[in-house]
Amino acid sequence: MKLTGLFTDGRFVITSEAGPPKGVDTTQMLQDVDLLLNKVDAFNITDQQSSVMRLGPLAASHLLKQRGAEPIFQLTCRDRNRIALQSDLLSAHVMGVENILCLTGDYVSLGDHPDAKPVFDLDSISLIQTAKILSGGHDLAGNELQGSPDFCIGAVVSPGTDPVEPQIIKMENKIRAGAEFFQTQAIYDVEAFNQFMKQIDHLDVPVLGGIIMLKSAGMARFMNRNIAGVHVPEELISRMEGSKDRVATSIEIAAQLIKGIRETCQGVHIMALGWEKWVPDLLNAAGL
Amino acid sequence: MLVSEQKPLEEILHSLEGESAIFILGCHGCAEASHTGGEKEVLAMKSSLEHAGRTVSGWTVLDFLCQKALIKTGLQPFRGRIKKSDSLLVLCCGVGIQATAAAVDKVVHPGCNTLSMGGAQGEWRGSERCAECGECLLDYTGGICPITACTKSLVNGICGGMRDGRCEHEPEVRPCGWYLIYERLQKLGRVDRLRDMPGIRNHAKAEPPKALRSTTLWALEQEEQQTERTA
Image 1 (cartoon, each protein chain N blue to C red):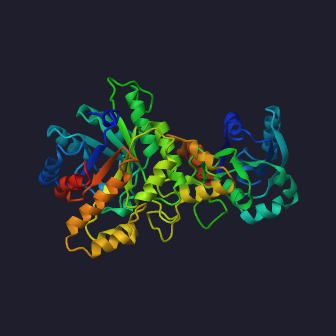
Image 2 (image 1 turned 135 degrees about the horizontal axis):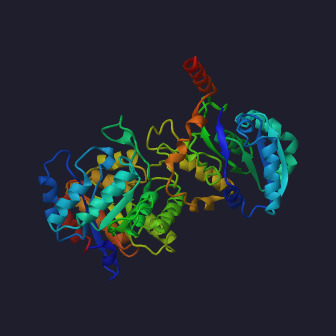
Image 3 (image 1 turned 180 degrees about the horizontal axis):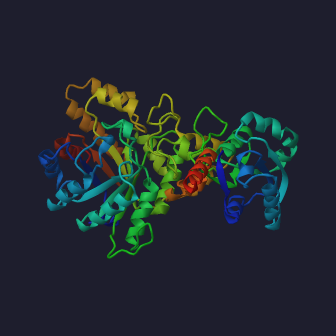
């Protein structure tokens, strides 16, 4: 099932995330997926998230497919050159993957193998172009394919970046390259996000607002210090700090954010980061 | 010695679109030796541009465009003409183009692709300025090289890792290259250039033929070996 098919009937689309394990024990990942199987539309399968080496997203996407869940296969350009990326796209199609998310990828120094050679042969935009070219029946060298893949191509944008103009121009370029839907970096400021959505009103493409559930005040401060484009306002941090029930407060905050952006965007992308079991409660609280 | 080749004339004309007065700048250093930016090539470029209906507001060939201070003094006599020009077309290596862009508050168009260092650095030390990628993009990035200024050498714009103008990798010492490019294009009123996507890079261009990558020393060594073999 292609994600773009869902937006066409005006539905508010919900995606979540499944993080492949460090190792080969997939029990936890699949349990988390089972919890949300009929509650979200699709799961992003992260690709060596934060440059930390793990089980690959292609194998994990395949496992999700077997379970009846819809994967969004993430690909970054950090670890593979254009030959490997094209090959993985062909493999993904053969395994029934219909949705992909094209990213540049974090730099290697952010993860657990800082001595690795960073690749970046392609980048987010040229990877989108590559997926489009493969769908057209050719590879990047112009050779004809024996049967061509067909993908719904997603991309990301970071609305909280200052200045935001280069982000918007890049988003426009991603659309020109072939991006069909967008997921955003985590949002904590409803007003700023809705302002951003107004700025991209001329772009006819569905946007899923990014929601990361806050687990503690410390986590919020950590993100403010270390994650580009994420800003948790002081007010939310103190709410978490003063809370007697962190889970309840986290759900309350995330639900308020979702309600606040619901009218301006076409869906949400919920990154639970281990709190998958609370996502059904969050969806409930957000009225989804 | 930085070995360069001239960009195809169509590419140069495309980058000069909408500009009525163009000042051509050549270099007596490596570009003259590469036959891409000496007096002869500057005059040939002048007549090609005029033949294509463009106005050349002036031209000169300076000693070492990789030396920012020399550019400033060398261009002093042409200040008035440059002021009246829309942009400069610079025929030299990527270092000289960036040094010119940093010295003059005008749009700077590269007329050459830099293929190889041929064994020696350019003169603008301090930081790496040209990676000899063979596909000069300085025209579209406001005279700041994305291959050397961006940690990931991205050619299609800013990534999600920029914070407060700094790179996600070593933020304390590295500015975000694409933030610098954006700032400069904004200053020049050319942010729209970011809408031109270079797309998929041709990495083969960064590996020029062996002869162009070799130093003079290497050529001499080859000659010696050849002589030894025949003897």
